[in-house]
Structure formats: structure tokens, C-alpha cells
Image 1: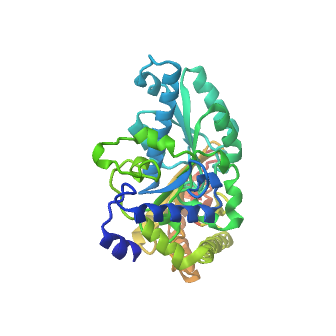
Image 2: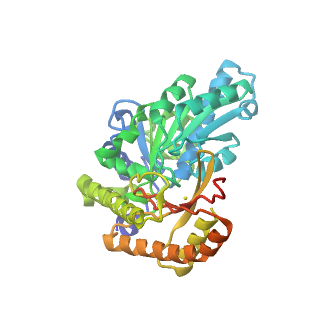
Image 3: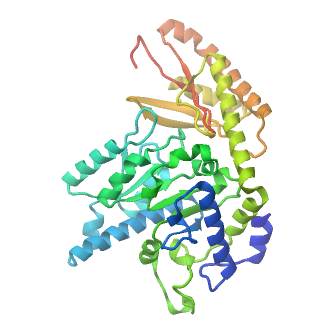
Length: 422
């Protein structure tokens, strides 16, 4: 309602405080509310003395791109201060950023758009990026003459495929020591930090330069609404400051002008829909919503494990509940059209894992829906396994379906093995 009727009817173009004080100030208030709800450090809040604050972007993809550009500008400025004769292109051509091999595609697209290298680092058996892996990569790249400048660890909290959590406690000190911009992308799982029992995944967040999450994914807000917090807003303002006379106003510098915090000039009154959700549900209401989804994901996991034909790819984490066999299962499920699931891909212990994801995000999701989902999966499994039975007997294949749930998806995986060999 806040998005469809109020924000749209107002028609605000709030690129600066002067064009709409209410738009700017409500965004400051709501991003502070949300930051406190998630347990973020105070230096990310507008209300805290300092240079930090929150801003609403459109998507996590835009946020990542923005951070890559700001980090690039910061490093180029640093290098030119030490050597005024060096050209921008000579610095940019040597930059390298890092992310987990589980991070979202937007990370690497941002690298393409910003014309910097983005290197995927191998995650561990739990799909987590560890500090030692990052440290070795930095040493290797420095030896080659590259300049490490950005980690979107992408310290990823709640990866797209497996809802894995990178180890920020290990990654953070390395980034601090090397003066590398650490961005935490918690687009999906960030909403769960409203619940204190999940905040252990945030340990090390104090090392981050920026943090983002998408309330339009798991906090009842309509698309598009991605919230980003930054420790030092001057890094954004300095990177994107274009200030013609027709955009200047008397209070400039005393209040945030969000046009300096984003790629576009104009911006919608997105804070209204976040305000409506926070006021309508409150902290307890949103906590109840998140916990119910986690419980339903665990419910689906229990059903799949009890079935006996499935093995969990990774332990259930939040609401996300993994080679030819799995593809056949996916094709069968989609052909019958009872549920909609998408495939994902990961690599663990040297093995390629192809799995299916069942997302728990609907506000009205119930146990009845879980049972229907379970039935759809198992009925498709019956058909696929029956189809493969003769091939198994003939060729000696030993198929083991694998499922993974976390308050995002359920995962169905098979390892194709012949006589014990992959």
C-alpha cells in the first residue's frame, strides 16, 4: 500500500534534501531502525556521531557495483597521491577483487562493468570462504604485480545457491591489514539477523566498509528495495560527486544528498514502503515471520530425510532448503508444474554438485504447502528412479539423491558413481 498508493501518488524525486526533506529524513530514520534491528555496529547509523549511514538502493547488484566503483576510486586516489604522474588506467589495469565461488553473479558482472578483475576463490566443504584462502590469493596476486583492492566477501552471508556464510572473523582482519574494501552482501539472509539467534553469523561485521541486505527478498517489502550501510559516506560522495549549480542548495553539506550515494540522479520514495512494513509488523512480527519459515524449511528437511532416498547436501540453514539424475528430477518436477524450483551449482571436496532449491519466502506459507511440496518432489523421484532402475542394474550405477534445506531452498543432489569412481 505504501508503495502502490502513497509513494506513487506523492511522485517525489528525492535526489537531494532540498527537493524533499521528508523523503531524505524518513530514509535516514528507517535505515537506522533496520540497522538497529539487525544488530549492525553503531558506526553504520546516521544517528551515531561520525560519517556512517544507510541508503536505499534498488538491488544488491547495484549496491555491489557502486561499492566496486567507490573502492576503485579510493585506491586510484591513494596511488596517485603517492605518485602524481601515474595514470588512472595504469592503476585500474592492475586491480583485483575477490569473492567466494558461491557469490552471486552480480559480483562478477560488477567487475566487468568497472573493468577490474574479480577472482573467484574456492570455498570449503561447507561452501564457506576462509581467511587462509584469501591470504594466499592476495600473496599470489601481489607477486604478479596486481593490487588487491576489494573483497565482496563478497563476504557473502547467505549465498544464492547454498545459503552459505563466509567467515568474516577470518576475512576481516586480513582486509584491514591490507587496506582492502570489505563489502558484506547479505541480500537474502540479512533479514534473518532480526532474530538474535542468527547473529553469530555477523561476527566480524565491524571490519566491513559496507553492508547490504534486501528487504524485498525476505522482509515483506515489494521489489525494489535494497538497503546499504557505509562506514564513511565521504567515500561515496568523493567518488560520484558531480555538482552543477542547478543542483546546489543552501543546506548542502549539512544534510545528506542521496544523489551522491547512488548511480542515478533521481530516486523514488522507497523509504515509505519500508516504513509501512516496520510499523505494521514491528520487530516481533518480523521475527515471527522469519522463524516460521526456518521451521517450515526444517519440516521439509525432516520429511525428505525420513523418506530414506535423499541425503542433505548441507545442513539446514535458515530458509534454503545438489548430476544427470538430478537434472532429470528437475525436468520432471517442472513438467508437472505443481511447484517451481530452480537448480544451483556448487563445488565441494573436489566434486561438482548440482542441486535444486526450494525457497521459503511466502508470508502465507503453511505446513500444508510443505507437505504438497514434499509430495511433488517424491512423486517425481518415484518416476525418475523407476526410469533409471534398469540402467542402474545394467551399468552398476549407485545413485544417491541429495537434498538440502535452509530457510531458503531444499536441494536434491545425485553423485553419479561407477565402481566407486566419479
